[in-house]
Image 1 (cartoon, rainbow, N blue to C red):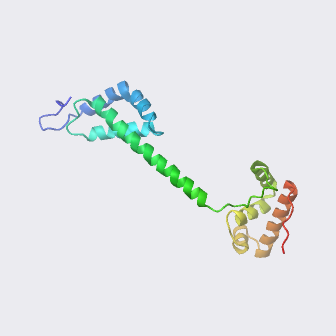
Image 2 (cartoon, one colour):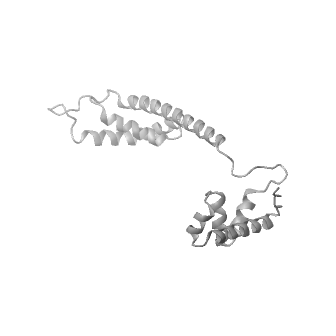
Image 3 (cartoon, rainbow, N blue to C red):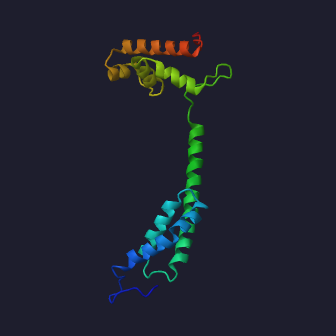
Length: 175
């Protein structure tokens, strides 16, 4: 297979498309299946291996065996990268502050809470979401929705009261 160069030592213009076509038709599915045993991104790994093949000069004597070796190496590398990313994401998630304190007494179902929030009028819902999840001040919320600071605060309190009623949750006592 090495004997594919023109007189000037460069591969002919028709060589790569023909070779890649044969390799894709005859081996792409098997290469992808092989890579899938080692990683979750088998299609990307096979594509990267084919790109690496095109960069080779001279072309490997046994392109199929070369592709399997490169696919294997890239799949192992991708698998390691994926494991590292998952570990990092799990650590980051564990360190992240919780939005709500969990009480073993008053646990509410997330779906029920989401439905209750969705049932609020938009003017209350957007203020509650901006305050709790967005962390915005009432001044910023007022600017956002086009009302005064105190009106934003009233909408927030009305939204919380409606949520408590819908969820049957008691209001925490303040000192």
